[in-house]
Image 1 (cartoon, helix red, strand yellow):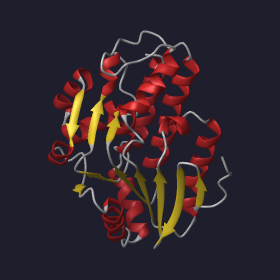
Image 2 (cartoon, one colour; image 1 turned 180 degrees about the horizontal axis):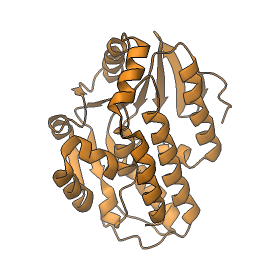
Image 3 (cartoon, helix red, strand yellow; image 1 turned 90 degrees about the vertical axis):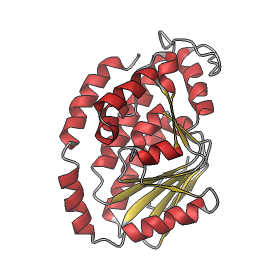
Image 4 (cartoon, rainbow, N blue to C red; image 1 turned 180 degrees about the vertical axis):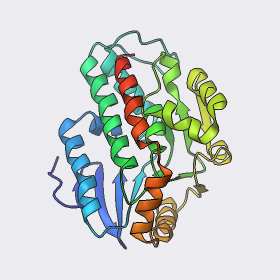
Length: 257
């Protein structure tokens, strides 16, 4: 991995270019491979600071369809648990043979969530394909979320009796209420693009064709707002920033479950 020394960078499966004062972060990789790379995580956390200090007005994080999918999630769980996982015939995961891998996943998700909710500029997630539990939760830390019509949120953690990571139990009730939230968190299942829009989990469902162009246009319109106005409004709106640390303190007791 090349060192990230500026807002714009290029690495295999992950790059950033600035387009009209928007930092466009493109992900075309198995996100778990990057998440488990501590050097990468350290570089990316520092990257947020570079963006804050730059003239960039916002970030558009846009992923390809397989980036957050179940195939990659199962590969990660197989590696961490030390046994072959089959998503069509799921089994309860009672322990992790490589507990350090699970710990890195949980801790790095926490770190990225903290960075996003404390980010003073606009942060937008544009997602396609399957979005498994950890990144469903992570996406809810964004200011805006766009998906295409084929996107589904998969609450796959329940199939393996794993706690829902990525801060999902913290964020989801803010959008759909405690009653519906606990049902999804315990029973699992999936949420289609239409359902996600109806539940206000996403801001818009964009056409599959020209998804990138449409997402970028949406972000350009949002980022016309005054930066000081954005900063103050976000600080007032995300009053629960301090509460997320208390939540993570609790989750830290369940790293291996």
